[in-house]
Each structure stands twice: as C-alpha cells, then as structure tokens.
Length: 265
Image (cartoon, rainbow, N blue to C red):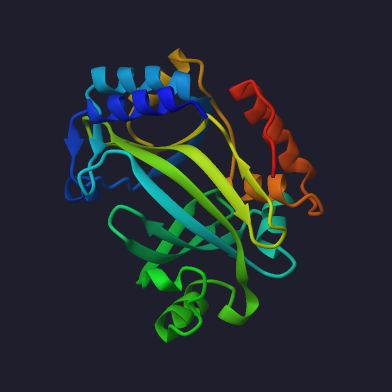
C-alpha cells in the first residue's frame, strides 16, 4: 500500500465541504438503487476532485472525514451464508458486528437481500466487548432470532475486516456513496490474512427517480460497475478449501484493477 497516496486521499477528503450525520440522516432514498464500483487509489483521487467540483459534501463524524471501521462476520460452521451467495441464492442474509472506531460505537447488524435485489439492514447497539461474542446479551440474541433465520447457537465469528471509509452526498441529496480503502481481512478459521492493497470499493445509493451525477463522474474516469462482496472476497482469499470458483474471477478483476497479485499470509 502506498503511504503517499493514503496521505493524498486524506487531504482530498479534508478539502471537501462537510455534511453532518444529522443532515445526512435526512437523505431519504425511498426508491433506492444500489450499485458497486471497483477502482484504485490513484483514480480515487481524481474522483474526489471531480466530486468536490460538482458540489458533493463529505460526512464528518467525530472530527474526521475518513473513518476506520472494523467488522466481524458470523456464519454457520458450514459457511452457509457464504455458500448461499456463491450459489446465487437470491434471498440471503449476512450477520456481522461492526465498530465505528472513532466513536467507539458498536452494533449487531443483519443484512437481508430479497429476490428483487433489494438489501435491507437492521441493527442494534451492543457493547464493544461483545463484537466477538454477544451470546451473553439476551437482547442481542433475541434481536438476531427475530430478524434473521439464525440463532446465536447456529453461528460463530468467521472473519474480520477492517477498512477506511469516506461518505459523500450530492448537492440535491438524492444520492450518497461510500468509498472503502485499505481493506484488510483475517480469517479466524484458517488463521490466514489478506489485503486488497490499493483497491477501492465504491457503493452508490441513489434515488431511482433522479439523475446521478456520480455515475457520470465514474464513467468519465472509466470506473466500471462490479458486483462484489467484501465478505465473499475475503473468504475466497483466506480459505483455500472453500468452494469459491465464482469469486475467484472477482479476485482476478481486483488484481487487474490494482495491477498486482494479491498475496495471502
């Protein structure tokens, strides 16, 4: 990973006018369309410059516009959630805990995808000491059972991810995007670790009734849409025994984007 680029990205994000979390919570995307894009850090610098010129604002939380996140993904012993995605099951779920490092806030999060491709996320606050094991939190266990197909007895921590995120909102507040860099993974089952180096994953959430400024910016910078799951890529990289042929093609796409081979230790 390139420290000079990281510093430049921090500076570019700092130069974008701020939006508060309270203002951003007012961005209601009732007819939401989600798209993911893959690029590298050098191109991201150009995208951030274009976004600033177009009037985008950057979420500032706890005094920072680049925020570190830590997530722990849970799955069944057979990796049922991973395999449901690999096997193209339309209706599927993911369970994770997440810490917003700057604030110290932690949550249990349940993501559900329906057969129309729509994703809904439910979450509840937990203590930071419960990220790896919330089994003693009766309310969290009840929340899991009430909002997913699983109970706490069905799942276990499988993999951790860490990354740094920039969140942008367009002037009309009809779209927002998250930009994730410095992605690193640790697999608790195999003990293996991997990094996506200077790969960048962008997720665009937009109001389906409004034109998208960001799509034009990304197209101009030759940033193409791609379907990619951080959890599934992480498992593919760190568990050589799991069925992952479909996601290995995604790994090769990432390697072409960053022009280097991803190594696992």
